Image 1: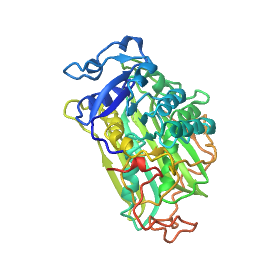
Image 2: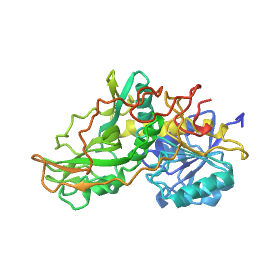
Image 3: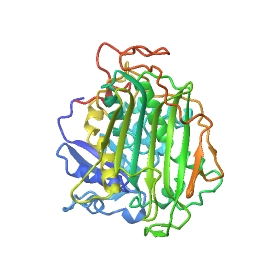
Image 4: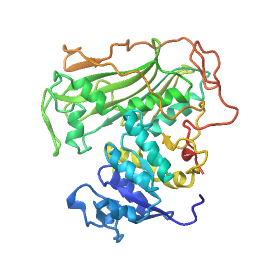
Length: 421
């Protein structure tokens, strides 16, 4: 459809990412904010301007009444809770509301087959789409794929978010990621793997885009202990507990590690990270030639890693809500309505949006590998950086069957909802 009026949008949650998405929606002429969903009772009835830090009242107040929001007949929803709720998503999609989400959703590959089928059927019923992206994963993966287009040969793509998480005020999330925990806690590496599994989705998506068929995805993590106590207000990081987390979800073809998506995160003032902080994202492509790109989100009003990253997380979704709405395919002959990553053409072969790999294997190492550092690692070798040939974007010289590049440029997913206007 061709949008000739402002897009009617609802904002779902107003937390760390959601309130910045809400701020962006209010400031756009091509969007009309018609509703705001809030989980917390303290936010119900509050004007969207107050929730978003906008200077003038909007007249739109937050509610926890889903029926009332759907009765507004919105075109799109910017859905920004930390984790997706399948019941909520199904209701929105069945009602014909196109969903742009940062809620740990890139391909939906971490969801159960039953939940994925439910989402597909909801899209079909409502003739709607769900589009997942963010800063990392999301924009960072697309930058990596674009950067690989400058290489004659690609052996490995590695993407790392390297930031201070001290201002991300979610004690539950940070604790699940290992922070403030005893490094010897049983199952800690597995907890971090589960909490960060969306990065495995993005690794599989990147492998699809470069024409690689992964045999498995593994995970390894290193924990660094705090050298002193830190009180962050919303939580404490006691001396001797985890204050640094450095991990990767790694995609393998045979014994070759070809895609890596991970993080180098710290919290508190008393920790030395395993690798120096970049305060942004680092994209590395190993091949011919090797490529390295570091970038940071920056705003003059606030310099915290959290504010910059949260804004960069929501904008790939908020800014492209009109694109998703205008690109919903007709019911007849429709392709997949599950869209992935960011709507920027990439030098990659066309690939399915959903990739299934073998389960991740994780084991924790009980003894510290060095003073103040503990490691959880995978059963697979983590030091494999093969110099053997790997399929390039034109499908040449691969030791395995490489997907041939199509004659026309394609996006990195199979839904037209992800293409720019």
